[in-house]
Length: 232
Image (cartoon, rainbow, N blue to C red; front, side, top):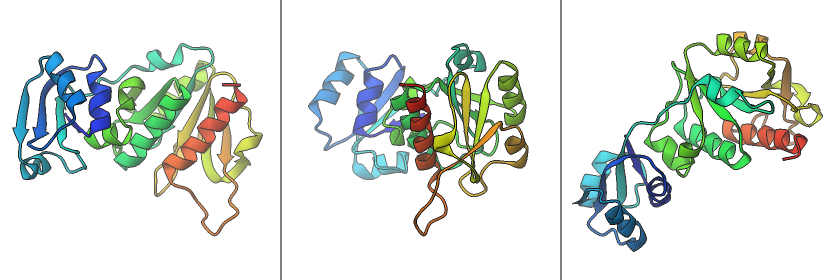
């Protein structure tokens, strides 16, 4: 998997993630990064800008790292804590939204993120770039069926908080104990079967002319509120 950008490079180089090779542009001059690459004895290949642009479709800032694919966690890895807070992404497809949500989860200390195997964005280079490399610090679980997974969570004591325009003011809900917050798809929101499994529906009051927020923004607002309620 290719990941790219200076901030991502710093994060990855400071982690234990295996780096197969590093590509840098012939004008790349970040001495700190170059020294770290050399200290780790990672192969470096210099390329011209047009060659770098062909490798990835994002702002690479002159550096691309070829790293091992992201290693997903298991459901057990993120549910053992008696005060676990989990974020469930109901078919989020935009890698920028996914990356921003990962960054929020890392900043707030969320126990983990659950994503479905189908019709959803995986952890890719753009996601890693948008998360500023924090994807390496957040446990992400990929499951075959979200509804069945939510049923399992409920059986082990989790309260499920869905998100929708028609619900209870998110500030009036209690997110204590084991809790899972669901972020719906960018266009269609939560699926019907997923929504039916929710114990509560959280809504963000709107006073302006827009009637909805970007998925990652809405998730951040509710996750930070949950952490506030928990005294964290």
